[in-house]
Length: 351
Image (cartoon, rainbow, N blue to C red; front, side, top):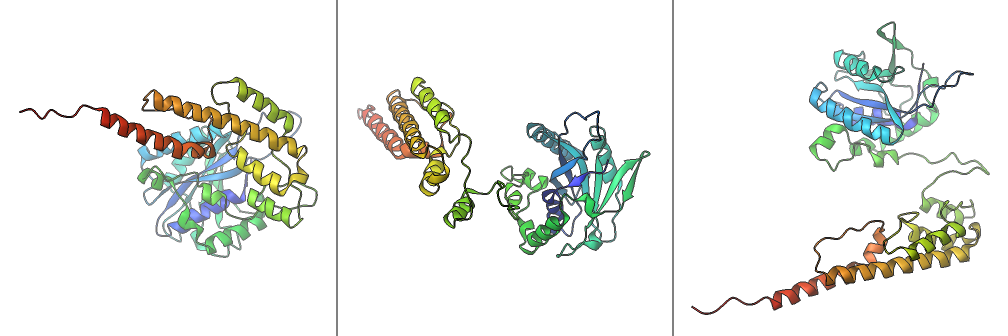
């Protein structure tokens, strides 16, 4: 069944090839896990929502591929995705057909996903403007991988994909792309590429229809009287009252509705209070929750210092809460260290 590519999946493939124009590159296509197929109608084609760049240069290292497949499969299960295909860009410009490596990896994916596809990036069609699709797609039919002509129907939105791909290439965003080779060199490199995923346009913006945007943009539009802000689900007086009562009952820290609950409350109530029902009550409830948690934190810090502990667990605390007591706690620990050092008996001077 023909599947569709999102703009994100298409752009990341191009960026991977653009970052290493002198090398062959490959990666995996990730699709949303489909629900049970309905009996009364045809199932929707798989939607490839993302891709995971794997390697550049040497593509046939089996041990590294096994490690990558294991980690990516675990990540897919956690996010309700499935590995749905394979892509590759060959080293030479005129080589635009799958080689033995591509067919073997694609066959491995086909064992677990019957609708898997293989994509080969055609280097000869690669331009900065991205005016036409630069990929060839192969379906597994009659025990063979057969190429089908790329069409605009392959993309969820070709015009958007073309525009964003061109903009990302012009801005050299490929320099920030991380593949699995980079991750193995330094485990701090995130192969899910959150920075690349945030690139591109926002929207579409349609009158009367909600759209997810960053907080800074929502506040900017609100100040220009261009939008109405929909508060997060947890910013509800009844829900916050339950959280406050739970926080007061428990000696330990209860889970908070958002790791930035205090910052978001201040921003939204200061700039969009007219969009938030019972705004004054919410302000009071969040302040009560904050005060209760800070009191617990100070009491815990006092106990920690008094019991001369070396380690402490900070479960369910936000960074802002931790920072409020950082100076106090560090000063206390430094003072206790000096006192203990002074109380230690000095070395004997007898000879």
